Length: 314
Picture 1: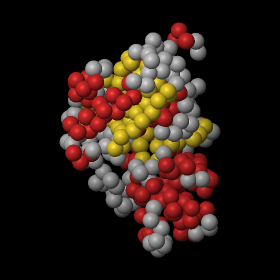
Picture 2: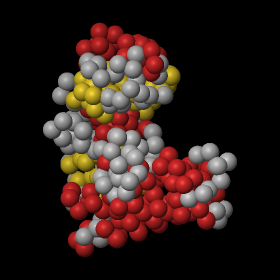
Picture 3: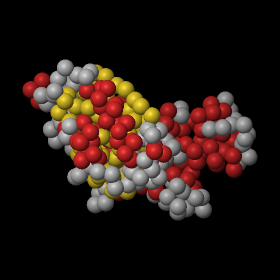
């Protein structure tokens, strides 16, 4: 891609979560030239979080010799991309719902602001600069502490009428029947297939209470712990079945799997693919399922791409 197709300046990008605010500067060549992070003062409320975001922007903007075109955000909560407002949110960040990110951060930084949900930012990043940059229709499926994702067509995010498209963890799963979900309902795939849910299932099976988290459970599974293997297999199988249900509806060209569980190893991937194969209709049996490429940087590329030309790929 020639330099003339790139923008004339750099973009600042922030990935805003309940624990930390990570940031990067992407130059006019779409390269990350500087990064940084600060803790999220989540319990102190939205103004304190906005101040922390502005502080990180101040640290990073001096790292670029180019003009900063704007501030792109991937932020926790349901984000209205039309006005960069937090339409709704959990209490992970106190008072976050209703925050006007565009107005508040323009006042603090002087920069134009564009924003999407944090998982949507990951999807944009992978679609425009990562594993999906050669595909026209991409489905990102993120399995970690929760389950979410994004659906992108020609590099453009489909966020839905209420900006909540991508809540993929709340598909019903027969393997989660009766299990409570984080949304307050029961039987959703997140209740059996997310990282914490796999750990809870392991303990329900009678697993060692000394195994404190899913990371350790995954190690145990690799060492032959039968209960750990069962819990990991069940969670991945359920995730694969849910992924097939999404594929059956959306017919993506490419499926990208991201999140912490995507690093759980061959046992997890084999069960995910088995679940997909069991539930995908025949025309979708050979849809490519690949791991994400960009890791945590995907959110930076996705947030920055809000200032790129509509169809530009890195």
